[in-house]
Image (cartoon, rainbow, N blue to C red):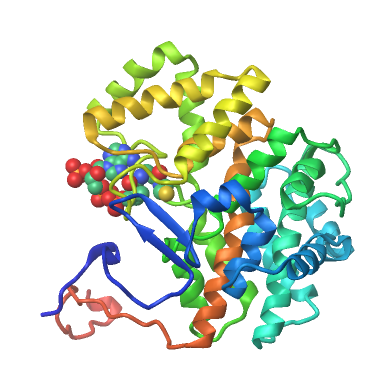
Length: 375
Ligand SMILES: CC(C)(COP(=O)(O)OP(=O)(O)OC[C@H]1O[C@@H](n2cnc3c(N)ncnc32)[C@H](O)[C@@H]1OP(=O)(O)O)[C@@H](O)C(=O)NCCC(=O)NCCS
């Protein structure tokens, strides 16, 4: 009899050079660099280069890479795609719009289904630049506003906030968003990355793998958790209600979003950065209640269950302080994780083997077919 590992828990399915997680110590490294240091010194654009190429860029390489990533031609959406977006019902959830839009972008991409490494890098660059435009355009279209043209003077983070509002973001908002993008860029064989790799391993194309990733990210046990956290904060509403609310939820055996992790046994190393920035943004915008509520919930979760915050606990509080609607939180996660998905698709194609596990069959033994009128 084979050993069944439900949810592939602790199963090592491949070697990878992209991302290292120490679940006991709470450490996360991209290509050997600690995310704590990347948050302090790097930018999202540089992290994109690091994840795709495996090394930090020289100054010249970084300039060329940033220029390509932020060029209006790279960021702009095809006119026909914009027309397609206008056809969608305004109530369509942004994550569905993103999944549909990315799939449609494949039809307009000049590299089509070309799976050569250089072609995939060009497609990954375009997708990373286009996805924020898509999300921001949808936000404006559903509000009955015209989309804002990308501004090549802004990096990915500031430009996204600019395209949402038409205004230059504050320095703190742009910095927070940049850090959030850095922290969500990759996380080893998480569910969406694995989904992307499974698709890539059939020798399918990059856009298909990214669509698989978006589909897997959407669920509340994965990227969708950040939206659920905000709904919890809205339900609790006041910091003084947080302790009683979480204790009752635990008594009711509820699953609390933004807590727990398959790999981390301690606090997720990304959570502290988002807590710090959400706290600062809360002070700047007068919305301190979000983080106060989350801190109380986190204290009780630690005391009563020894379950600690993950990346999704504080990100939403920061986004909400920037005026971003809750249903954009998971698309924002995807705007960053596309970088990791692309890095993994490149790695999968470099040493490909079809991913095709087995199941232990527990259905009925062989049965004789019975004709419909004899059943
Ligand atoms: C991420 C997650 C799916 C990992 O779960 P997992 O590795 O499959 O672990 P399990 O679901 O088997 O949980 C193990 C135990 O911890 C408890 N637990 C784990 N996360 C919990 C949470 N967020 N709230 C309450 N209890 C939780 C489970 O109830 C279970 O308890 P039990 O053994 O008494 O039944 C899980 O922690 C979760 O659902 N978290 C909330 C969703 C979330 O924030 N997702 C984003 C992850 S980055």
